[in-house]
Structure formats: structure tokens, C-alpha cells
Length: 328
Image 1 (cartoon, rainbow, N blue to C red):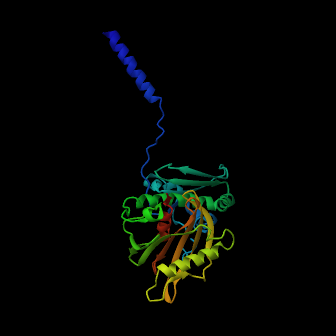
Image 2: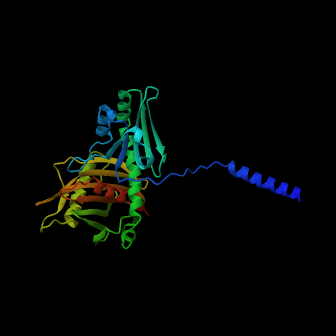
């Protein structure tokens, strides 16, 4: 009987030791929090009020291109290092500055250190100059890291209530996730105009296709894109009075760049629109996707009409919807 108990105890101890020997790779962290495009900046007050703080606001907080009024890429909340504890650590996006004579000059990116999902970027250096140099040298990397995180979060919130009763996949062969608060304002063949009413105006999405080689590859691309969107707008997006229609504002030089959507080469354009013969205007963001397997260009555009209010987060919502695209 004693031998049987000893054997059983030995087996149980082996099981316990085996279990204890397996590391817990999934750390338990709380859910992150915060409004979209809000950034917690962790550094002491004297640094925030001095050259480092100015460099952060001028680089990471640079104005978003294409908006009618200056709005920073991120709304920033500064916290001194000694209060970066407890719930303060749950922010989804964190930029931490470490100035210390013992620190190497470096930039490090951490995933979910205190909450999930979370991106924390730590910039360290011995002097103000070291840190400021790191800020400007890595500006694009820092902005894109936080922005990509925010796109994912915006898309996660969109998934909570999706618009499902539409013919977009059947007619355009794409899947795109947008909230049920939007409605199909116009559907003509493979053209879709999707709208959401807001307190001060509307958020708008336009989806359509064009012949594969209708946009040039070189410097002429921007002129082709403007001519394309103006002709489509004249045909499909009327203004408040007969003969009015939306067109690109030629007083504002468009931004044009290359990106990837759904693993396909894409041209991104940002600028402002106006309505011919009417006092209406706003920002737009346009993506032209080269869908070679289907022998076409896919055009997805978001534009905002929201007089007298800030528009950064509205444009960002439309951008995150467009970036959810999956092409069949």
C-alpha cells in the first residue's frame, strides 16, 4: 500500500515538474485603450517644453496632407516618466523618450509591452541632439508604425457592425468592409457611391473600375488621375443645382505616391475637391489599384463634406475602409 502511494506521488510530481518546465509564452496584459490617432508621449516636462518636444510636434505631429486646415498626424498627450504607471500604460500608441548619459542612441519598437494591442516606440540618447536626430531620421518609420496600428484598430471597430446587403462583390468582384451606418446612395453597373450622414455633412466612398492602361506610369499619371476622377464625378456626383458637379480643386497641388493594397501596386492621391458653381469643398483620398489578373484598374475614393469641423479622423475612417479591400 505504501509502495503504491509512493509510486502515485512520484507520477504526480513528474507531471507537475513537466508542466512547470513549459514557459508561458502568452503574457497576460490588459486591453489597450484610447481614441483613434491619439498618441501618448512619455518624457519629462522640461524636455517636452524644450527642443525635443518641439521636434516631436514638428516631425511625428506634422500636418496631414490634403486637409483644408492644418491638423496633426496624431493628437498627443504628454506624460512625465514618473506617472507612466498603472492605467496610463494602457494607451494603444506610446512614444517614449529616454535621455540618459548611459543610454545608447537608438530606436526600438515593442509589441504589446503593457497592453494589447499596443505599439511602443522608445527613442534613447545621451543628448538632446542625439534624440532629435533619431526623431527626424526615423520620422516616416515612426508615423507608419503608429498609423498601421490605428488602421487595424479602426477596422476592428468597423467589423462590429458591417453593411452586408449590397451587390459590390457580385458586380465588382471585391470585398470591402464598411459600417452598417453607410448606405448605397447610387449603384449603376459597376459604379457605387456609398454615404454616411454625419452631424455636419457626409462621408462618401466611390468605387468603380477603369481600363487597365488608362493611367500612365510616369509624370503624366497625376494628370490622368485628375481627369479620370473629374469625368466620373461629372457623370455620377452632381452638386446641389443642375449643372453643378464635383471636381478636383486646381488651387491645391495633389500629393501622389505609390503603395500596395491587397498585394497589388497602387497609386495613392490626396488633395481637395470643390463643387463647380457652389461653395462646397473638402478633402479626398484616391487609390488606383492595378488589378492585372482581372485586366482592369480598380478605383476607390473617399471624400468628406463636413464644413466648419476637423476632418482628419473622417478621412482616416474612409482610408481604413478602403484598405480592407480583398479582390477576388
